[in-house]
Length: 110
Image (cartoon, rainbow, N blue to C red; front, side):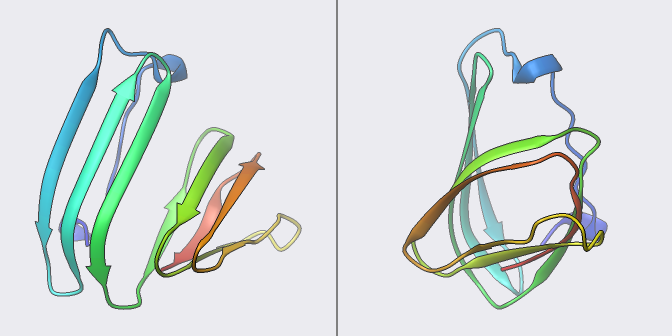
């Protein structure tokens, strides 16, 4: 889904922005097609993905703790950490989950 199979994002401290920022991107890859919208405003970041996908897995890791509210309108997602002492996160179709992960390093299956 990402160029060279790597996506690196950098953010300002505490996700602060100087104003309202909205970015829209059309995606047309073999396994993923649709629209991604990213909205940032004063410490809040909203991702809206309207995509059709085949099943795929993404390796994820962050150098910061992670707090997230995620909705799965259609489809599901499953995060499995490499460290088996860390919690797994499964969100089935038509559900949402609010979670905090102190460490993120693992695989997300979509």
